[in-house]
Image (tube, one colour):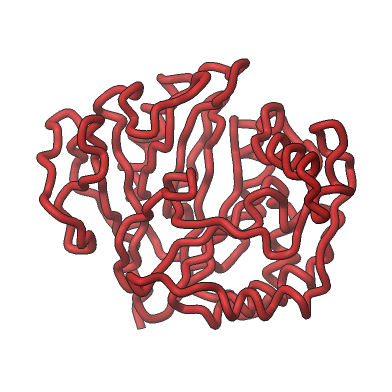
Length: 314
């Protein structure tokens, strides 16, 4: 059976009407929006698929209602705390949020946060307590939901047993109505995790954060060892050029840093990444510009970068 090819769905964001999307056979939203000529992408050649199997269905684009444009919702799933591992962690939003939750009396964050910073402690619930929450995760009215699990922690942190994460990922495979978007800065542990999981579920996407060339060199080999249907990169905050492999990456999310001391994103490198995504057939998703408070409608992003695409197995 031939392996499925990776296609993309594209949404070009209009600052004045950001709730609309460009016409697409997979997008079931109202009234199509004319696409600016400068953002039109050349015809893509299909990128090599990661695994064999039946095609993934086409779903509506993420709503971003949780505050993260590339997903529908987030969930902790019994894992709390983290530690800094690279320059991308300098302005960690999860660290600041954990500090606020600890100050509000949250028992889950009391031990992992101290004075608004990570304490160095990472805690997790017994896996038997997490599995029912995965299986009973609320169903979306549309019939499908993108979910970013462990959005405020790293499921491959050195303090987390690989078998703990593996058992939960196997349970995620039973929820075929959910696309689980995994993301880690410790991608060197992916091969060990993949071996523990066994048959990797097709609705679990494997992702890694790579903010610059050095982190790409360190993390891409581990990510590419995962037999996931979709392997993806979060290039946020983008701090420098990021080399994209010719094969194996289906989706790239790029964004600048936010906050009062945000570092400027290298706009030339953003264009370079977008162009290389087009060359290899990977979906490109621009999340936000850099700045104190980046615009969610991408009004502060050049018009030809206001592109939001999702990978689709066709």
